[in-house]
Image 1 (cartoon, rainbow, N blue to C red):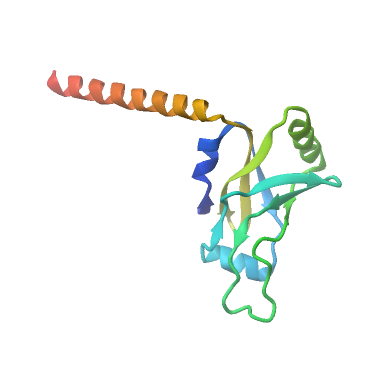
Image 2: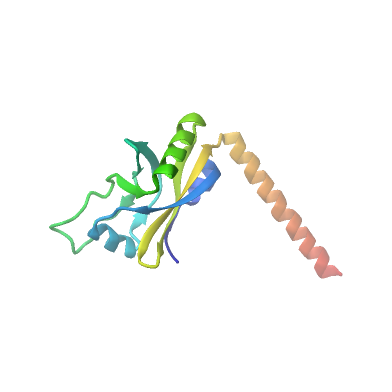
Length: 151
């Protein structure tokens, strides 16, 4: 498994409730550009329309050598999921007011896969609370390490 891109900001901005792996329908020049690592997940999200899931605002830079048959870098790309999964996630997005954000894009053998997370947006005070908890955990771990060395 070779990771192409990660969305570190998603874990900061959203509380991830559930994860799912899906395939992406890409053109040839998009695959070549993704292999080169020219893909960003910032500000991208998944949406459902007409019983299909799409990833929006995922930037795949145009491939340099595909001048005549290039692609639009920000086009909507279809996600390859089972119908039951689409209905499940579309229902959760509508009823529970969750957002589906991409967490990472990677190669699984020769296929490009995307890991999506159903997330609830975090408020500013939630983010501060989370950072404070993480810092206290680090501090405690550091104290435990120094006490173990002293013995």
